[in-house]
Amino acid sequence: MRETDEVARLLQELKSRSGLSYGALAKRLHLSTSALHRYCNGDVMPTEFAPLDHFSRVCEATPQERVELYRLWVVVRATRGNRPTAAPEPVAPAPPATAVPEAAPAPEPVPDRAPAVPPRRRTRGRGVLAAVTVIALLVAVGVVATGLRLRPDGETDPARAADAGSSTGSAAPSAPPSLSPQLSAAAAVAAAGASPPGATGGADPSTSAPISVAVHPSGWDAKCDQYVVNRPPSEVPRPPAVPEAAGWASQVGAVPGHSRSVKLTVQGTGWDTVLLTGLNVRVTRVAAPLAWNAYSMGEGCAGGVGARSYRIDLDAARPVPVVADGSGSLPVVVTQSEPAVIEVTAETTTHDVSWYLELEWTSGNRKGMLPVDLGHGTPFRTSAVKDRPLYAYPAGGQAWEQAPARR
Image (cartoon, rainbow, N blue to C red; front, side, top):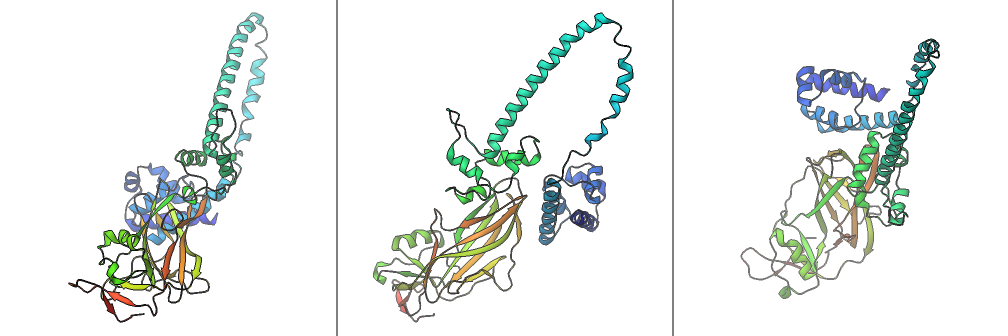
């Protein structure tokens, strides 16, 4: 398989570049040397990405190499997961050939057959007990893996059943008989309260994503943020410090003017590695700009470009995030211990626009889209400030003063 060869080639390249021997590298990875050899030769592919991820970190792989290694691993695991695994079974016919001749001399001592009956019954009894135990275990694990909750009357909770029935993929129904690693992962996710990707039926989409997103305002570090407020200057408090920005805006009913900048901190919520693959913007409402006063939070206008920065023109027919000049972009790998920061600035010069973001992600054989907004389904909002009266609060001043419009 080409992807398997590519994984082996990339691992060998990383190992060679690290300058470490198989023994030294295996010791750092807490693996046996033979297991490491099999990984690097493509003979074995681990069922979890963690060993390969640890390998890439120890060998100081670049972010692009780690993303490529994860992509190849996902393809290989998905392909191998669809193969039948019962091929080795036909090797068993050899024992019956030797057992038949030895059974012939045994029939003469008739009395010896009587004691043989109780053990056979005991064996059957043990087999039945074992079968009942296994069935009970499979039922219990199946209930957890599919996210169903049984009520005292034996019926299934319909809300949870709807969520489980709408999930993508078939891992949950087919996994219990084989007790595969995928089943263990599904059971753990369900036990943690997460729903399968793609679940509908009124479920919160964020519960299906193995990531969390913290949304922070940019503050007025750039000294060029503006707000529109439906109040005269005498009723608007002076610009607050960054930590009090949200409270200030809520107090006066302020709406970000011309542009809105937010910083997203994306982090894994469990042990799985997650690949962020894309960013989308969805516009929910477009109206005429608010006819309110505009207030500037500082003087001067300067700002840097973050590690991953996007700009969005909300006035476009189909707004899309565009990578800022000199900035990195998606895809990027995130884990519980290694978050990623994404900065987004959305601008409008002619409208009052409500909008939210969508983060595309993939983890193993799961993928989905996570909506990002102000919380509880409240979208971001940005209104143009063109031709509106603009006020600034000069350093050392005691009141808002009208300033020449910048935009």
